[in-house]
Image 1 (cartoon, rainbow, N blue to C red):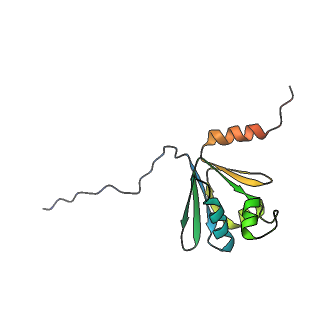
Image 2: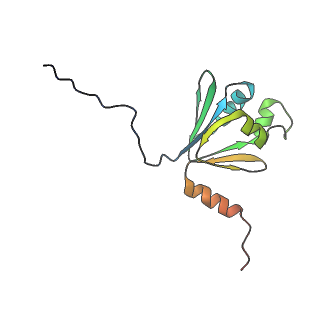
Image 3: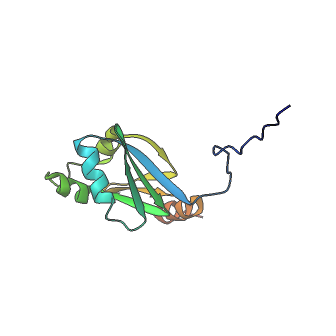
Length: 124
C-alpha cells in the first residue's frame, strides 16, 4: 500500500494584526488616475487586475481630493467622498472621511487617536 503525504495548504488563517489597510477600486478611467496618485506615497502598493485595482498600504494613507481632482484635469472640488465611494467597491482597515480627504488606517489605535484629536473638547 502506498502512503501519501498531505502538503500544507497555502490558504491558512493568520489572526495576527498586519497593520495594513486598503481599498479595491474599479479599473476604469477614474480608478486608474486615483491609483496613479496614491502610488506616489511611499508605503502604498498598487496591484492592477483586469477588473479592479488594489490600493494597499502599511500604516496610513490619505486620498487627498484636490490632488486627485488635479490629476483628473478637473476643478479642485470635483473629486470628493461621493466620487471615492462610487469608485471603491471594498475596503479593509479604518476609514475616516473628511472634507478634503479620505484617510485609511491599518492600525486601529492610530485611527482612534486621530479621531479623538478631531473631536471637540467635552464640557465638564
